Length: 169
Image (cartoon, rainbow, N blue to C red; front, side, top):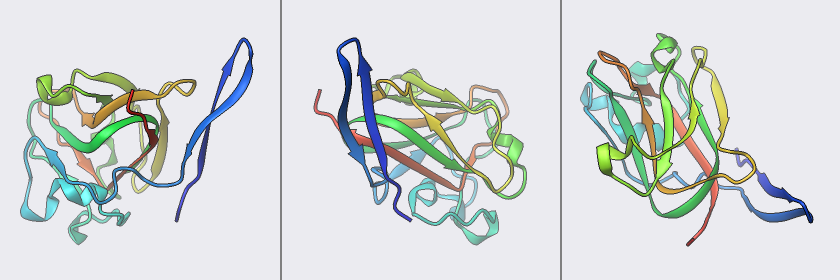
């Protein structure tokens, strides 16, 4: 399924169209994570286009239980990101509660100190939720991180989609 997002800015002088994104800009790119729970829970599973929410089907990424786990995709170019869609697994969905979506150009603190796009308060089991990054301007960056600031957390993602447009700033 191809999504189409139209990005429009409002200003004192009126409304103007700045671009659109029909493609998930994270698709087909390599991802990494703080740890890998088992060989079938690889970071790349979260950007493989497979939204299967059954963890046993090797379609989700997962870290071990650890302090402040993270997952990251390097978009390889600078983007202005407006929407991040996350699909949660069909069981133990509460593990994503409290996680943060961070976007930026720095790898300091594994990229977890970059600009906050959104906080994940809740995604029900098997559900996909869209998070809007500062809807009026988006968040600039090359790296998209999903970061759980808690101690002793497990980070599991079945699919992460990133929508925005290339912005060489």
